[in-house]
Image (cartoon, rainbow, N blue to C red; front, side, top):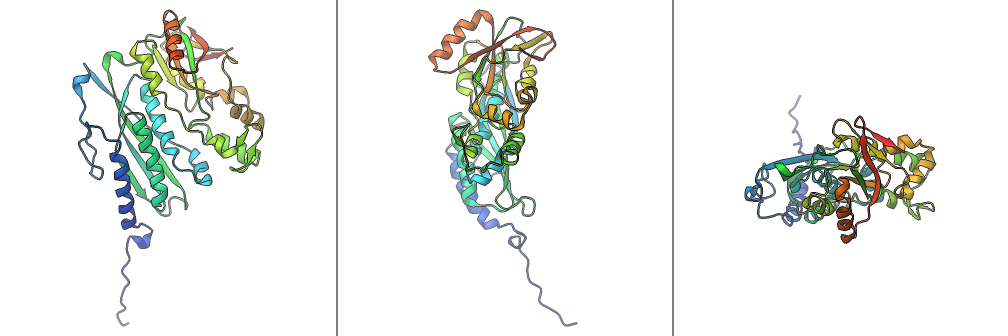
Length: 348
């Protein structure tokens, strides 16, 4: 057979446009640099991010880290074309996870994977990440942007993050000092935050048949807007609580709800008695319960039910904590107390 000239196949032919990716990364670099502090010693694009810990500020520094994702809330972002809030969801979730242990966030890294890199969408996502990092005093020092054609459907992506913070060893909040008689203070959430979306999406879009842009009378807003409320950062109020040693334990109410998250900080021999009806349950949770005839137990271990953070305050410090929260114009609810028991939540 005569020789035939073979066509050269490129990475772009396989669905990965390196040149386009490089242009997007230049924009990411600019957004990330706006979050840099003087402790950041590297530029975006290296094999690793460099961060110099200011050890002079801490007697015995301990690094505190966490990793998380946004989950199926992203499905709603895809449908609505809203991509600038999911970055804040991710950063704030991670910040809260380490802040409840008394840590101050230092730096953040993200992982963004998609089938085909859309520069405009990517910029919106990273812009949200950068804005939230700045708001939390945290540097976005690096990450990974992966193009994986054939792995993700067109227009879809996954987003995850990793955070590192620092706390003085003697000031880490572990819950070890929690004892019977301590007061449970609940701080309100903005909505689902980033948990329970698989059930919420099923109830809204399959059971009720809502469209994301459909107005829901029970919520007084559109279905998608109600589900896309940004996960709140509690960092500023946590700092006030820990600065004056007003709390002996804090729980970020994420997947598993109060039922599974509060016991994570309870020492042996204690339980948490939570009084149902002591805080206003947000309309979205009541509507979800009605749509699926969901049992209360299931609701309480799936959703935050309107409480995004619980702080355990010693009884003799409650008045001081109450005064501080009021000065900060922070809404709060006394939702129960610590009792003797076996590391579980008792609802009454």
